[in-house]
Structures are given as structure tokens and as C-alpha cells.
Image 1 (tube, rainbow, N blue to C red):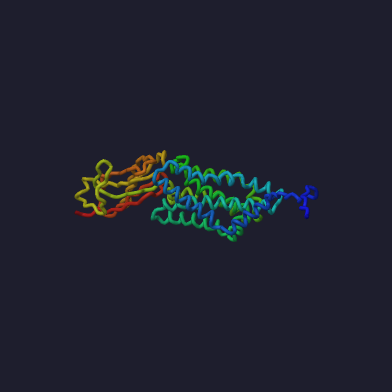
Image 2 (cartoon, rainbow, N blue to C red):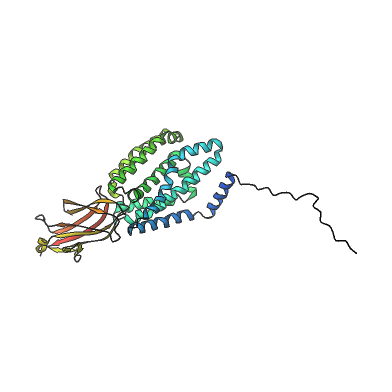
Length: 354
């Protein structure tokens, strides 16, 4: 008769598994590898989020501001990045450079690609505005090309901080009118002033990173001259946040419903007047002044109107002109502008003899 084996509790217990937590450097390396495998994910996601926000703003949705606030997430980092970078580099230089560059580049991509749809949507058939949108698109593209970004932007503190400032300024043009309901004529000077103050505060860091007097002079000149140039060319900046849904030249209007669009007006019918009509959509809660500017030869007449945002169908505004000069014949242009001259829409018609 066989005796079954007896299980004994005595003996050596199997070794307990040691739970090893990954260190921060290891986690960052894994994140870097993940980013290298999917480098397109963040730009594409930000670009899609920008279009979603743009469409919601055009439809007058109140919670469009929530989407637009995503662009604000990058601002705190861009403001404290020089301090954080210095602290990290003092502990572990290579790790500090990697972390600062990785986070900064990712946030710059988020800011630029999120803002790009708003800039594109506001761009008119104007050479200056098309060029401005092209610069924004080019900066967004550069932020995604690692060899170019590492060589020309991340390598020097001065270039890196200037690029930070540019990204923040572009985002401010979009976010201030939508989230903080700042009128466009105030958003541009406020954003420029904020960027200039930030560049002044980071001046010592930028100055030390430039090793020659030639590069220091060029950087200093750019910090002083570029904001002035932008201000002088402010009419070429697309009015992100406003959208002209419909616009036409007509000769009649009834209860804010315009008559048929016309391209030619006989001189004999000028007693009825000429009307420039537009439907403008703005973010909910925004009160904004717009200007109808009538051009003929060297004569200019400006008529202002106030619009209010939030309507899904847009705010209807018009300008009626009844008084004309003696040399009335020829081509006329009506520009719909912000108070600082940003072009929203351009309408054309001709007054003919008859």
C-alpha cells in the first residue's frame, strides 16, 4: 500500500517579486521613443482641435471658449521655461536640455497648429494677409521638423525665446477675443505688449547665449524693430475671431433683409443710394466695432457700426451712401475693417453713366 506524499509547509519560500518603479529619466526616454514613433499625432490633433473651435465660434457656441482655452495651457510653461530649464540643467544637464526642448516644442506645435485654422479662416484675398498666414504655417511646419528645429531654434536660447514669443503672440491673437472677449483693436496691442515685456524679462538669458557682438546686435534690433514693424503692418494681420458670412452691394434693404446684389449702378439711380451689407459672426459676448470704408479715386469715407457676438445667424450690419461726388463714375470699393484697419471683407461695384 503506497503512502501518498505529504505536503509540507517547511522549506524555502519563492523569492518575492520586487516591484521596480521606473525613474523619471526612464519615463522620459519612453515618452521620447513614443513621440518619435508618432511625431504627427500632436500637430494633427491640435490642428483638428483648432478647426473644431473655429467651427463652433462661427456657429456662436458658448462652449467654443472651452476649446479655445486649450491654447492657454502652453502659456504658463513658456513663461517659466527659462527658470525650469536652468534648474534641470544644474542637476542633470542632458536630461534638463531634453525635457525643456521636448515640452517647449510640443507646446509650440499645439499653439501654432491650434491657431492656424482661425488664421486661415480669417484670411482675405489680400497679399499681406496671405503672407501672414503663410508665415504662421511655415512656423508650424518648422516646429515639426526635428533636425531643423534642433539646429536653428533649440540650439540657442535667444532664438528659442524669440520663437516662444512668436508662438505666444499668434495664440494671443486667437484666444483674447474668444476667451477674454477682448475687442480686436485691443487684442493686438495687448498681445504685443505682453510679448515685449516677456522678452525684456528673459533678456539676460538671451544675451548670454549670444557669443558675438554681431549676433547680439541683430537680436537686440529684432526685439525692438519687429514689434514696431508688426504694429505698422497691423492691417495685414487677419482678424481671427470674426467671420463675414455674407456680404453684398445692393440698393435696397427691408428689415435688415438686403435686396438683390448688384455690380453696376446707373448714375440715374443714385438717389436710391448704394448699400454695403454684411452678416458678421463673432464670439458670444464680444462687442466689436467695425468700419465700412468707401473708396473712389482718392476720396475715402468711413462709417462705423457696432456688432454683438453670439448669434448663430450672425449680426447684420449695413452702410448706406446717398451723397456722391461730382466725378462719381468709375470703380468703387467698400472695405469692411476693424478699427485698426484689419480687412474683414472687400466689396466692389461700378457706377456707370445711364
